[in-house]
Length: 259
Ligand code: NAD
Image (cartoon, rainbow, N blue to C red; front, top):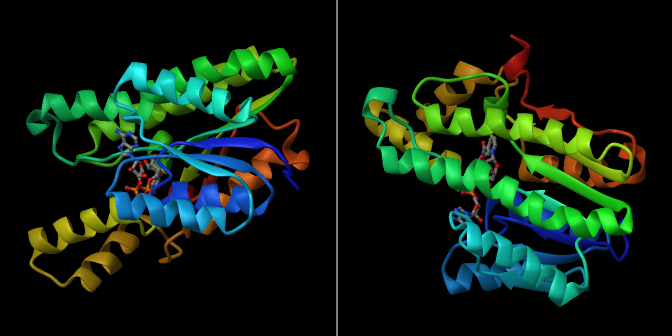
């Protein structure tokens, strides 16, 4: 369906990003991976995505650094000729009440979860505009739509991503360039496992109980959204049926924001 498209997926050495990268490769895309991690983890991610027979490369850009975001986009264009699909996925979390929130964690979360989306989009757009085609998908969150306690930086950044998505959509609405956000609820990845472990330690319960409580508190389906569900949403947004869909949010949250 996406045969011979060139896709850049940020934060694709783990979790949701890795599932998106693998799914885009399965749909026919050449993929540039990016993210942090041990060499073995990165090689495992590369091998998983390469299973589909398309070219796959890895770029180690640290997205908290503007110059490295710019290099990621430029090097991808140099390596594969262009970028048709940009998936801004990388993200981190830190939880603490506002009055105890470490300012350096605020700066880091805003840099990776919001500013890197701006810098990658800014760098990728001219090529898309010159060719009159592009798909930008931002992995936001239900926390781009509603708030939770102890997540000030994350909620602020994700609300910012939703706003940025709308602006990019409007500025490029006359071309075949779309920009949409995907808003997952709870997905069981390393990012959420840490919150489950923290909750179990805080409440003196088992990780299994903490997992059940986490779901019950927010996600009425009482089931995690799967990384491959998010990948399916991204594939849809990059495909022909979504050609006139831009500036929107696709919410995969088991009913979280419905109540
Ligand atoms: P994850 O921790 O499994 O993966 C995060 C990825 O981002 C990894 O590849 C990591 O190496 C990369 N990354 C982190 N810091 C980076 C940096 N400075 N430079 C480059 N790469 C960096 O997390 P995940 O759950 O797969 O999250 C992916 C996205 O989905 C994030 O934007 C997150 O906010 C969003 N999200 C996740 C959930 C969830 O429940 N897991 C829910 C809503 C939204």
